[in-house]
Length: 467
Ligand code: PHE
Image (cartoon, rainbow, N blue to C red; front, side, top):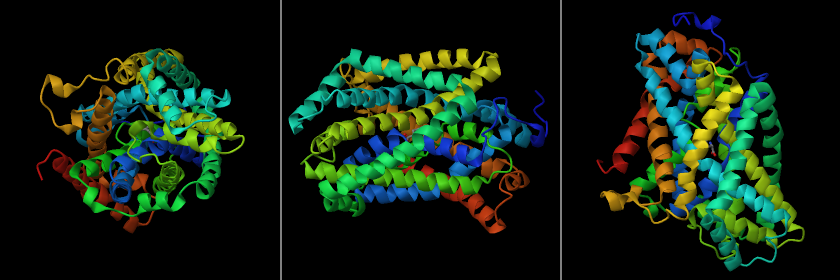
């Protein structure tokens, strides 16, 4: 391949999105996932509610926005998997190939995230099964706890669902952009929204809506620590799927004439609305049933079955909810798998199906560690081997999530944005953002050059106790 060829001539090897709408749906599908519906409410719960939400929103707008624009831009100019795109662009702009390592950190983060993401998505499949077989009826608080406890204690049950979920993801990715990715997002995203609205109505009428909304929206800054600011930033990266190359990858399939700023605005708006909506569904129910918002990763699995239990035909709603949650997880998992698969197709010349199976198998195996961290390895803790701070005290699953979301994603997101705004020539970035007024371009460049990097660095420094 001629690395110096003009960008106009470079095109993706795997096809393009058929329309602006499918690109928006695919990126929104990547962004909206377990991060919004499962993770956001429990992290907000663990970090004091409203104050966390406020910091999270600030992170989304001043850090997430410029970085997402940068990532789409890099993908569309590189038109390859994130590693190769960064290599080509680094060569073109600076004669330096080392930028490929930024893509590599991103790909590795995606690997780790998908390994545990799939296990949690498996829980939603299990709950779907329980719902439709009526095994979630007549629940009380203790039974709900024990059902969840039984699931996490059983490595084999989790393994079955984890395998099933990985197979679905691999199957869709094997079919390629148009027949696989586009088709699935077109089906799953509208359904998810519809169900969330139905659930919101339920929560307004049946839950302690005001208590939930107050918890989510009234900030109590006494609960804010440097660690919660880091968690808010990590969550902003996680929920927008930033820093792992999946946005770079999806950008590589974006036709040249589509507006990057326009699509990013829509995507970020939808993702944020869905996270807030999920919080407004879940917290009123938590308070209504005397549960604790600090229940951690089990929060939605403990609360929602209890809520649905209260209405006739509730099992239909809960079945629907859990299957749609699984859909949201699938559309995100696709974006986690695609970059490594594209890398393998482009570099090893394997077929798409073969690449998807090989990478999928590796990620599936890594998932064992997450499964075991809820049972046989639940007592295992790095801090017993060598002394470490509180960030590392949790289970292996907690460690994976911490290292990927709070460290690797912000780090590679930071480097992507530095590349787009400092290294890439002004005329190149202007060419990618040619549809917007110069003032908006300048605003992006200023945020990408200064605000986002300084924000990320300050949060890092405060989290490790330097400031
Ligand atoms: N954004 C997804 C979610 O909120 C998760 C994800 C993270 C997907 C990183 C891709 C990359 O669930």
